[in-house]
Length: 267
Image 1: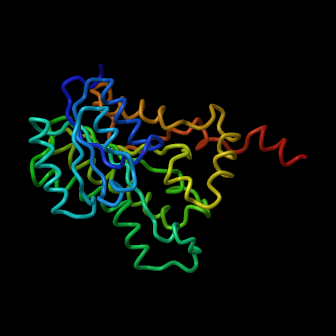
Image 2 (image 1 turned 135 degrees about the vertical axis):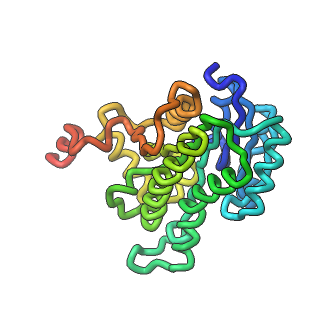
Image 3 (image 1 turned 180 degrees about the horizontal axis):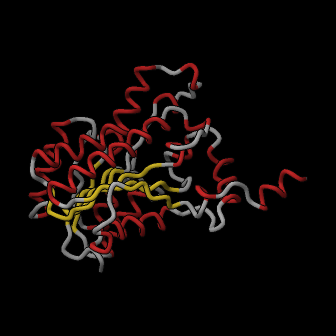
């Protein structure tokens, strides 16, 4: 039980296909106590109350972009858990431009700013409000979920690519700050394309999922495998890993081309 005695907060569980859902189940298996949170609209759409019942925990609604909501979340979580926080998962991402199928050369800039706020800047807010309210225990671990589109161009990913770049930059900057303050660590996991409710709504996603599977020598990493990686990063086994963007993609990020892709092109 790698997380016995640890207390945490998990952002972003929607339904059984969510990575955050899998993380919550794994945290429970490994002895952690935690609260669950998501935006009120996501709570109405998803099944998070079922997850909370299965994990014997509480759902605390919070808009991750709203400072007052975050302050309330931290206060209520500490009351519920009986102490400060040892780990946080940021599994939140949303782009109105992607949802509305806007071309990259025809973006709605108000929507673009919303994408950056929800999917990137919110990571800074999560940590800044935690710091200001003295929420984190020493040697705590904060993990965000990213994607390789932060480094490479994937046309279907649109303005979410900029949001993930922002997320990873904040990881380095705040990881350095929190490391100095109380030995806390901050990392992102750059996950394989994963079949989730959110991912399924992206145009061209299914084709790219198949492409990544053929490109990766180990195949795509599943949501459950990503959850295992999160458990490791939350645990004391990763105490000196910080400020990193950690690829968890079956080798995709370091593969130029695969035999499977060559065979397809030769046909």
